[in-house]
Structure formats: structure tokens, C-alpha cells
Length: 154
Image 1: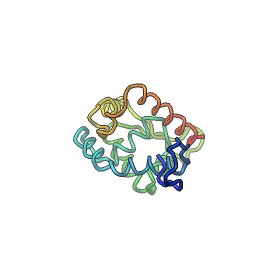
Image 2: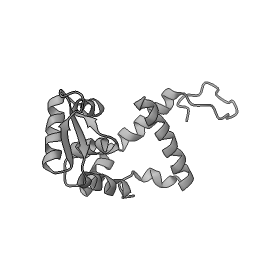
Image 3: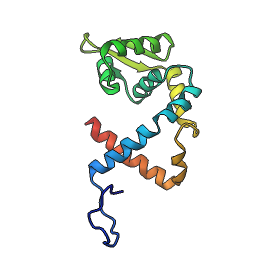
């Protein structure tokens, strides 16, 4: 995994990769295969990828529009446009926040969840590199990603 090796000629020892090396590796894998993945999703769902990307985030948990904007890395007007389209399609609902009327909470509908679940269940969506992993490795990777997601949420 190491991207540099200062021990030329030294016997190979499994070094613990740094968090930064792992971050760069994950980031590169995702970015290098993003176009391929988006094309597969576009072929599967009848909406722009930006809508599916937002829908997938809302499927994990209800979000305020401002939280959704932060997670997507876009501004409030763009988020409003995406949410408006998803509401018009019947894939999410938008309701006032229960304790703070300044915010709107976006929740996935059953139709929206069906779309996300159908994409997740389709093995053809994932880049072909995942075929190199057996079931145990996929479970291990899933557990590691869950731990990272949980840490990011706290």
C-alpha cells in the first residue's frame, strides 16, 4: 500500500499504511472510477446523477436541506432545486423542522427508497475491481467503511 519506500533493497515488511496514504488511495479509486459508476447509474435510473446522489444521502437518514447542501458540497439554491425536483418526482418529502421552523427536513418516500435499493442491489453498478474481492473481504471492507462513516458522523 505504501506509495513511497525509503528502504531500497530492504526485505519487504508489511508496514502499516498511514491514514493519509489510505485516504489518498480511497480518494483515487473513487475519483478514477466516478465516470464509469455515474454512467452505470444513469443507465439504471431516470434522473440526473445529482438527484440520485442526493437521494442516496437522504436514504441513509433524514436531513435538513442545509445539512444536505453541506454533504453534497453545493450551495443552498442548488440544493433547493434538487430537493424541489425530488419532491415533484414523489421521491422525497420536505417538512418544517419539528423544533426549528427555519429549517426544512427532507425525508425519503417509499418510491425513493425503492430506487436507491434497486441501484444498491444491482451488482453491475459497482466498478469491476470489486470482483477481485471474495465475500469475506467484502464484509471486512463494509465493516471498515461503516466504522469510518460512524466516526465521520460523530
